[in-house]
Structure formats: C-alpha cells, structure tokens
Image (cartoon, rainbow, N blue to C red):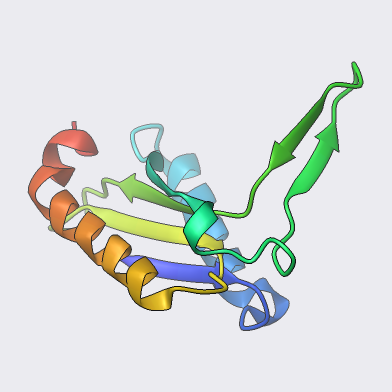
Length: 121
C-alpha cells in the first residue's frame, strides 16, 4: 500500500504527483494495468469543509456539480510484483486521524484476502 495526501505536506505535489505519474505510466504500458477504484472514504467524518472546501464545477450546459474532498483507494495488478498494489490518494484529513487510519487499515486487511479476485482478474 502506497499513500499520498495533498495539502500542506505535499509541497510541489511531490507525493500526489508521483502517484499520479506512476498510475499514468502503468496504464500507458499495458491496457491490462489499469488502476481500479475499489473504495472511497466518506469525507463527512474526516474533513473540515472550511479547511478543505468542496469544489463547484459548471459544465457547458450550465449544470453545476459539487466535488467533495475525499480519499480514493485504487487497486493495481502488476505482473512484476508478487502482490497487487493498493494506492491511496486524496486530501489530507482534517480530523479523527485515529479513526481514519483504522478505516484504511481495515480496508487493507479486507483487501489482503480479496485483491487477487477483485483486481487481478
């Protein structure tokens, strides 16, 4: 599992940019190596929306949509590795770090059993 958070500690997008680059390179190398979104962390409990504000977008037909800050978990099956890779990327949580960490660790425990079927197939 590789984790990168955006925010004050991601100077120059070093961590998140590196993971974005790796996921793009892997998917360009082979159509079989695609990052698969396997989980989203519900932002309600972990983000202060005054610090990490939701973003509002307007499309070409003037329809608005809101994107809430969150953490996304991707699975990537790489033939060169003995195990599948789990990539966690998102905005750094504002609060409840112990609960957030436990949620990510529980997800990792659940994935250890199911990754071969979920991502490797």
